[in-house]
Image (tube, rainbow, N blue to C red; front, side):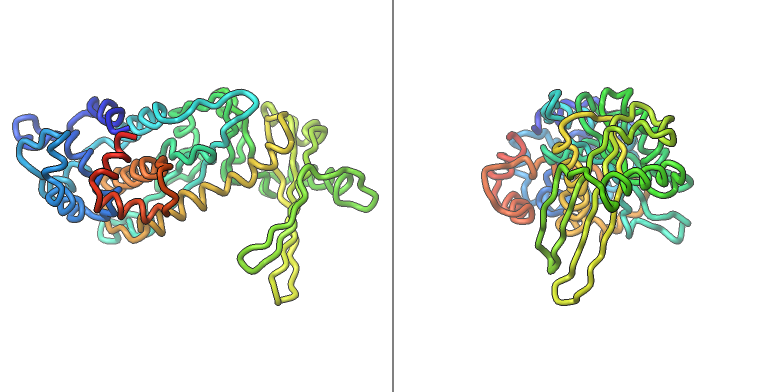
Length: 375
């Protein structure tokens, strides 16, 4: 894994003046990745790790002038072109990921996250917001793109899609990504889409709502769900029913949606233990896939793995929301370092320990760190 990472990032342009370079760019990148695996959360932490592991690092890095200072790390990551850095990351992950096959599509969930403490009021800079792509089955971060402060995720999502290898995958998006242009872009990438339909698409939403009320939820409805199960966890009991209606894709109000072949409805009925309160909610989805209805039902649940297995892990295990890296470029590049570390640690199957425990073990045990890096 580390050899492929070095291969990809050796082509990254060094933004520093050639005559004043004391430390190789690839050495700085590899030290930073290893340090973040080992629980580093700041430039000072990265330097502390490097100096503590100097002898071990010299087994595979040149380090002609030892470990760079924290100012050097900070300055380099402020100068590295984040677009090029993200392109290299996506190429590296592409070499690690297993290609999807027809009939068994990988669910690629796309969603945004704000790095809450990356704002800088003194420079009138808002907190960094990035959109990430997550392969839910392989548990790999596939890529990220920054959301411009003057726009929203709708503009960043197509840019992210264009960088990914999406053949034979099923791309899932929440209501923000439910746009005809985004659906078309996904189809052009030889993938299928599964999008949440919300009431802001008034005509389409009303037509779909009437169709499912008549055929699935209303009195006398005969349609049967493809999925019907109870779930008891977190102090509540939830019944979920999923209805898949290919015929709803022919509704006139949905005529302009490219490649639409299936419409789904998910009914969730929740009861909170001991409260006596019952809540019911119905959500609707549009999909270009005409595959196994059971797989579509599973894909809806898998979409939320980007929240539980990526965003939650970044916040709780990597303490991303507490990071005070404020420079926009450095914050964006540091966010990518965390995703590199997550991919490397997450692929280890040699132990059932938690991600937090694996990172601590890598910090203490050089042999285990080497196992993570070389696979």
